[in-house]
Length: 109
Length: 115
Image: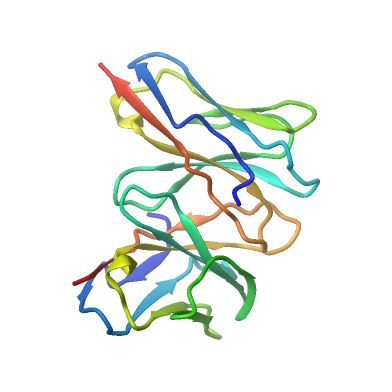
């Protein structure tokens, strides 16, 4: 079973900030939190990864509270091309990495 | 480009047949993961290898098998194919195993159609 729970879908408009929260109450000590983006008929693409606190890269930020039971992916100023499915994955390399159902983000003009 | 190569891109075959899907991981990556994604479904984990050894197994059918070769490429064999096996099959690779958060890098998948 997937270790994560995410909203099934979210809607936004171009230029807005989008925050997608993932719940992972049973996260293990050695688990990392990784977010992926997937477009139709393409393989998922790595966005960002963190273990605790905040991580930022050129495309997104990842906020992880101290208890690590949830995480929030923040996409600043989304565009139409950000319309995709976003997956939160919790685990560590070398184990069965089980994806949840993901969040379908729809961005409108 | 993720650096993970999957061949063929498309495969059309009949029920009862056997096919082999191939994956070449990114240079330097030792772990290979296989996933199945049916239409409008999520990513189903099948199996994972590290440096030639099986390390984790998901809900992989007995009709399916995989292996990772000494040159680190991997093959997924699907036999006695059924209509329900039609799906996108993704391979992903990562650097390490155990205790590290090395992210997965996915190929563009093989689309299998069973008629």
